[in-house]
Image 1 (cartoon, rainbow, N blue to C red):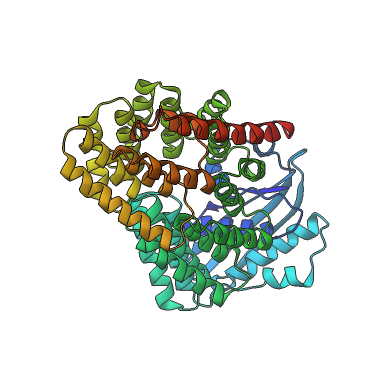
Image 2: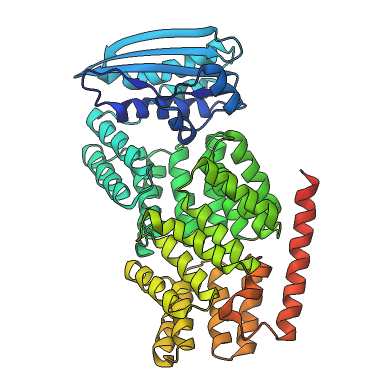
Length: 507
């Protein structure tokens, strides 16, 4: 097991941090391909930049046996790279080397460092593994520079940084139209446009296109398959997403993002036992990652283990207080428990950091909706719709608010648009349970119970599992006292109870 600390920038102007981060990323990526190794992912290691913790403390936190640390001095076309492999137990140096080369040798240095680490740890590499280590992702160093800068922006997961990343990936591709990693980066960023930042869903088609282009250039690119899987997941094409993510993990067994995504796709199709298995693998790759803790919390939420769910959400927020998704799901948990004021407070923590955060606006709107504060709910949903008016669930909930405030004509317009979006998504093959759920809600609001129950069955078949949340959701209020709906919830609870028992057996 090994962790690679961020390389320190010793360049004269101290302006090569992105280049040092790129070196860290590439060495992690190369080591991650070694079967049977545990390699801590880059997202975790970036937290140790400028740390004053010693090697032993870091090793214990990450549960690794060895740590690689190093520095880079880059000046014009010359680079000097120092690398040391240290055993955590006694701080002994197992290997160290200094490379003084021209910039064009950067890929050779990355491959050599990975190979020397394997030698030091007495790991025999196959000819195929050595071939992968020697691989040059691009012959254009300026394209490589743009790509590194783009990845640096992408990992901030902020709207403007994502846009900056897209521009930099495009610049890399202008210089090298066959740069697979740049296409994969573009695929990731296009997918995030839709999921995180409220851009139209048509960007997912663009994400699929560029990810497939990356695979056509490099069929052994784990990054490309992961990007494709991400786009498929957000598109609602879950079986395709699983195929792509599994291929990414096959190519890179330590690829944390792909491992976690397999867990999420299983969660989305309601297979919580399988989801928990992958979420625990994800956590094992980095015990300090906030998102991994959040993922397990969301699985417990679905399994009706609310105490455990809250504990895991709290752990994730201890590690990363601004993790939007943890605040969002903690708010949803409180809604399911009927603790509406707490739900409002959790959702507001997202907006206190960014008043225009799309996920925060929806979470706040939901919390106010459950609380019966229709004017406030309308305000939040309206702001969210100004960012993205193509989300069917958002239109349905805004329609419900208008319906409850005697604006029936406007509500019907919302419902019609939501149904149109749902029909298009279903025709395009979306398997997302939220689509039939909100179709059911529209029919319930309008008093069409037979249709509502039919669509609720489809939602459950697709993977909907949140019994208590469903029983409190205002948009389904016309079903709550229906005996057929109650029986449906009893049967759903039996499914959830059985999965919970199976998960408990593995703990």
